[in-house]
Amino acid sequence: MSEFDYDLFVIGGGSGGVRAARTAAATGARVALAEESRLGGTCVIRGCVPKKLMVYASEFADTVEAARDYGWDAQLGGFDWTRFRHRLHGELDRLEGVYRAMLERSEVRIFDTRARLTGPHEVALAEGGSVSAKHILIATGGSPVRPALEHADLGLVSNDMFLLDRLPASLLIVGGGYIGCEFACIMAGLGVDVTMFLRGGQILNGFDDECRGLVAEMMHERGIDIHTGTSIVAMGPSGDHEDVRPVGAGSDAATGAPVGPRAAPDPALEGNPKSETGAEAGCPLWVQSTTGREAVYDHVLFATGRAPNTGDLGLDAAGVELGRSGEVVVDAYSQSSVPSIYAIGDVTDRVALTPVAIREGMAFTRTVFQGEDCPVDHDLIPSAVFTQPQLGTVGLTEEEARTRCEIDVYCAAFRPMHSAFIGRPGRTLLKLVVNRETRVVMGAHIVADDAGEMIQLIGIAVKNKLTKEQFDATCAVHPTMMEELVTMSQPARSG
Ligand code: NDP
Image (cartoon, rainbow, N blue to C red):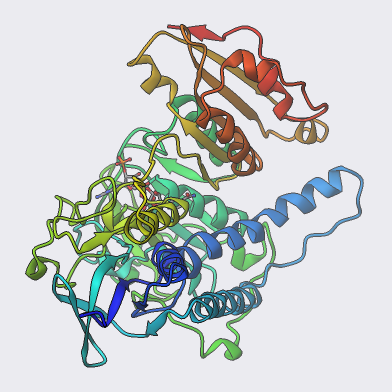
């Protein structure tokens, strides 16, 4: 008989925690998991999944317009946010149920409550009582952060975007990372007048410069008003600034242009979750920027980064070392400074992506419960930004690669057949960054519709360190956008 109640206690029921719990239980371990909110975590409930569904919703206006140019007698009706939101939350409820069922089938004991460490092997439950476990896994994820600014609490964060009562006419987005850019494209596609404030000179810091430039240009083409080198100096309720004209007034989704009239809030949605910030549509905000500009927006979205959820978890008391951003410091096996306590996913601030958290969870199980030596591999992780067009990336940017070795850069920039035929501005960029000496492809970057799908496949080649010549030995698929990937014979530049 073990001296502990469980072999593993997982705190956090997001993608990483659930996968670790299930895989550990499959080895015969006695596993429990605590989740204070909804099973599925950020990705399923307030991140990747609802975001992607909103991306799909936002693309139809363009599709209908393109269909007309292709000869269809297609008419764009109105977008009914209320109807979409109702279906969206129905889907999230379904997925949450799937997660619960998977855990139950794996015989993981679920505690629907907050858990807090009280020692290296003990956890106190907010619902009462405490349990002990041989191993404890922290998988509590992260949360959006707002800048330190008076009235910042009146702005929204990404979690709130799925809970809006109605679509705003205008939206100011602060921050130009993944979340800022994705929501800018989504909301513009739904007919919202979108303005972005970037404190730096360009969107998507850390991505390949040429790709960032093209995505920014395409966002501009979509009517997104991007202000670089701009921050908020003051903000507050618009009531005190009635002389300032609301952005989007007279040319917004409310008037039907370009995607049609918004529906009135549906009383049937009364039971749905409300904004986590308490800010509601219909409460416009006055904003003054560092450039002296004053404007009123229906909403302000702070997409200014995320912080690890380590507050009030009892980590200090248990002796767990935290880093400068409050993240749990772990080694390559996700083990913290306390040997019985591990951490995976966004709470460790390594690579904040769902598939990475899942892999960290599986590596944890293999190391701790299957006796394997399984450090987490964080090298060459493909990812995509779901802007319109999307940006897919794996490996080094041209700028990073230049600091390491001599490189050849192969590029193809063109108007894809689908857009060229109807005179649309859409452009595609394919880029391979190649080590000139070894010929290994060190990075691949794509700006294109569905670049997220493409980079998943190219990621296999880059991860396996194929050379440019091995890419070229593969026959092209014609006519496709990606055929350029194996036919770019001359470097665009070297250095
Ligand atoms: P990011 O770190 O990607 O971007 C944050 C943005 O906010 C940057 O533009 C940053 O500017 C700016 N910023 C930060 N602080 C301030 C401030 N005080 N005032 C003004 N601007 C500020 O964070 P996100 O929140 O967009 O995303 C968090 C993480 O979530 C991502 O790193 C990613 O790992 C993950 N994610 C992944 C997605 C995907 O895979 N498709 C989708 C969404 C999120 P600067 O660039 O100058 O630092």
